[in-house]
Amino acid sequence: MSDTAGKSIKCKAAVCWGAGEPLKIEEVEVAPPRANEVRIHILYTGICHTDEYTRSGKDPEGLFPVILGHEGGGIVESVGEGVTNVAVGDHVIPLYTAECRECKFCKSGKTNLCGKVRATQGKGLMPDNSSRFTVNGQPVHHFMGTSTFSQYTVVADVSVVAVHKEAPLEKICLLGCGITTAWGAVVKQPGIKGSSVAVFGCGAIGLGVINTSALVGASRIIAVDTNPGKESWAKKFGATDFINPTTALKQDQKIQDYLVEITDGGLDYTFDCTGNVHVMRAALEACHKGWGVSTIIGVAAAGQEISTRPFQLVTGRTWRGSAFGGVKGRTEIPGLVEDYLKGTVKIDEYVTHHRKFAEINDGFHDMHEGNCIRCVVDMA
Ligand SMILES: NC(=O)C1=CN([C@@H]2O[C@H](COP(=O)(O)OP(=O)(O)OC[C@H]3O[C@@H](n4cnc5c(N)ncnc54)[C@H](OP(=O)(O)O)[C@@H]3O)[C@@H](O)[C@H]2O)C=CC1
Ligand SMILES: N[C@@H](CCC(=O)N[C@@H](CSC=O)C(=O)NCC(=O)O)C(=O)O
Ligand SMILES: [Zn+2]
Ligand SMILES: [Zn+2]
Image (tube, rainbow, N blue to C red; front, side, top):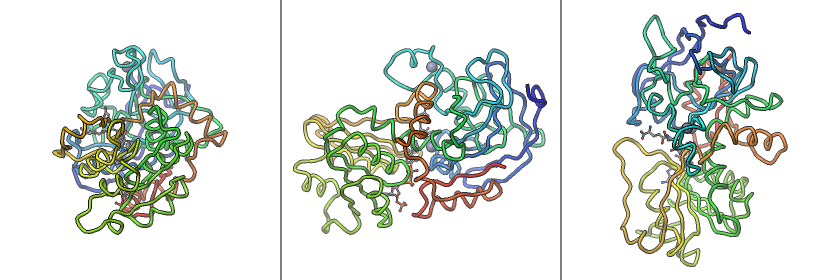
């Protein structure tokens, strides 16, 4: 039992007061966890493009003021009544995709999209419809059920998993989103072994898709990115080819037509890792007639919609999407941590930037530089 258990904790958090505003480090009061809730001392957090997407005002679910962050690693400080899955002192990863193991979704065996806390999570609240965060008495919204840009956060017990204590939290925090998302999107897609794959966008997500496709035995992995600096990254992670559409295409040629031409009819599997709806269309249309499967991972801005000729689907292409890689976090993340410790899952290679908590806005700027794959923030 910690000596702060049952009491409010005053600590620092990066608050976004309005869409498009920079984060402001504030003293925040974090209320103790209620029943089936867990308070976590966050030590490290990654910054994901989805944090930037919501900060920028492009997220239709965005609410302000808010404490963003969903790629964290920390230690359980205290638990509320009824919590049995984690204990004080456990090293944990908060999960923006909960896993209650009881709801219709969890029991379906068809999806990782647990329904237990998603509605309140989308309202920026804990499951009892209230916030555990206040700044000068004003409630501040939670984000994605995790809010890892606070030195202490409170999450639902179904939204947290304990992991091996030997694993460095400054690395495995990235399993809270990017790396797990990419890993799951590939390993849960049957058929990639021996197949051709095209990956649009070579940020952390795209590189993870490339790397996992190589690990499962894809025969050809074509990386597509408009940033020429990404070629060496893509090759290092296992791409066999790199195509920069801004220089490789003839006048009026579309990337999908070029890919179909160089692959004898199209790819077996494609992945959108950009969040750009035009790229999503290209990724679908680059698929082989009759069997090609295109997976959308990128998150598109409010108001954006995808389109294609229905004939693309009539003629046997499949368009699908993947959230958190289809991974059930409480069940599968401990195994991913073990795989990292064994050396079969890469994490260190994605960390290009480090920032102190006071520099978190610089971490957001880093993300816009083409040379940043992931920035890890030290929350001390
Ligand atoms: N579904 C899910 O569960 C998850 C989804 N996401 C989403 O995945 C997406 C990718 O995330 P992340 O890897 O971190 O993002 P990054 O921005 O780091 O990577 C995207 C890459 O795509 C490149 N790019 C931009 N436009 C094009 C284009 N027209 N054609 C080809 N490449 C292009 C970018 O180049 P440049 O650097 O020059 O812009 C960049 O290299 C985001 O939308 C994010 O929100 C993230 C986590 C989980
Ligand atoms: N809030 C957005 C959608 C954002 C989104 O698609 N989030 C992904 C995770 S992105 C992580 O970095 C996701 O898992 N979605 C599933 C979910 O239940 O939120 C909008 O409203 O468009
Ligand atoms: Zn993310
Ligand atoms: Zn559930």
